[in-house]
Image (tube, rainbow, N blue to C red):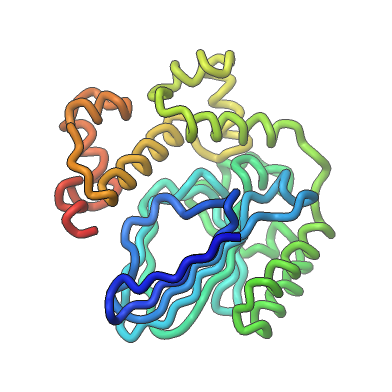
Length: 281
């Protein structure tokens, strides 16, 4: 495991702990808060749970003033514990915004792309942009994990152990399509030269309609959206690094018609033009 504590400003203490194979989070728009304490833990699942689960994560904060946390979500489902409640969130197509106040925390299970579909009786797309009580899909057994969350004082190891025990008791039968769908999403993430669905079809050897059906059933969102989202994540990392991009060239590399198209897309998702965002971060 890799851990790092950073004192980025005099009044803020940020602690990041993550397994090497999980890595740092992508898509976080604002980081860190200007004051207070913030802890972010990301851990990998055990081997018997890994076919369905990508990672466990926990965020704790103690901030003296409200802080707006924003992210560009990934093509994943989440099981989230917060404020004595447990919910399932499907893929969110919009920017996620949340005001952090006082002292609190949240624990989540991030399922692999396609990994939550076998738990459901309907296509993954039926939960796109929706959040529902976890008991509605996973049953009353999730209450045991809720009880640990309430009693554990946000101890990540206790929560991970409880989550593993719960998942092992309700894991569905193995589904080969999870690996297929997840593999396609991983290919989009890792291969920057995939800019369009046509590129993806050539790379996978699958027709565009078949890709669409797989993504609708297992991922919950279109392959075009996933390509667009991951390319925006790449742009965010470039801007955070402080580099001054060659905008016309970068627009072509990320699959946009021109610089204006890239800027408009970024602004619609992030809320500000790239140049203004770079100054803020």
